[in-house]
Amino acid sequence: MNYIKPIYTHRMVYIPGVYNKLEEVEARARDHATRVEAQIEDLIYSPENRIQKFVANWFAKFDRLEESTEQFTRYLAENVKWTVPEGEFIGHEGFRDWYAMVRKVFKPDCNHVVEQVEVKESEVGYVAELRIRLIAETFDDSLMKGEDINLLVNETWQVSFDSNGDVRIHSYEVIPVNS
Image 1 (cartoon, rainbow, N blue to C red):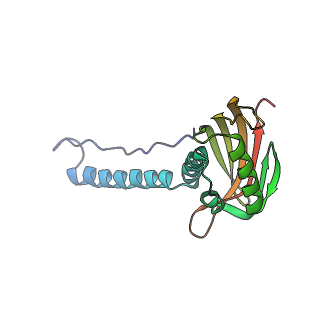
Image 2 (spheres, rainbow, N blue to C red; image 1 turned 45 degrees about the horizontal axis):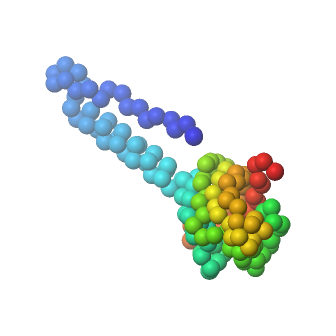
Image 3 (cartoon, rainbow, N blue to C red; image 1 turned 90 degrees about the vertical axis):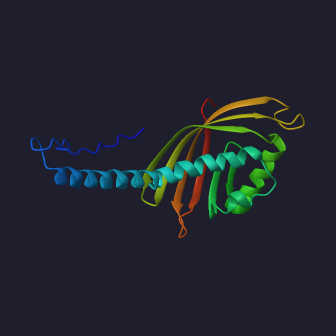
C-alpha cells in the first residue's frame, strides 16, 4: 500500500465576531475541496490504478477459458514474449498456441486470485509484479490427470499504454513460487 500525503487546511473555524471571517473560511473550504477533488482524480486515473483494474479484468476473462483469444490478443504487443512454465511463446500466434494448451488442461471457471499487485514505472512503461493464486480443476485426460490445482505464482508483466490509453502487454513471465 502506498502512503498518500494528507491534505491539510488550517483556520477553518468560524465564530462570528470572535474567530476568522466567514468569507475567508468559505474561501479556504472551496480551496480545500478543490485540492481533495484533484487528489482523488489523480488516484483514480493514475497509471497504477488503471493497471490494477486491467489485471483484475484480465484474470476474470482467463477464468472463463473461452475459445476465442481476441479478448486477450487485442492487449498484447505484436511481438509479446510469453514466458511460462510450459515454455516461451512469442507473438500472438505463440500466445494462441499456449492458450490452446491451457484449455486442454484446465476446466472453465478457474479462479485466479490476485493476491498482490505492485506497479513501478520503468524506462519503457511500467512493470507490474503480481502474486496470483490459481485454483482450478483439470480434465481427467490432461497431463494433470483430473487433479485439483492450487498454485501460487509470481508474475512480471512489462506494460505500456497505447495511443487509445489501453494497456499493452510486451512481456509476461510466470514463475511458480514453490518450484
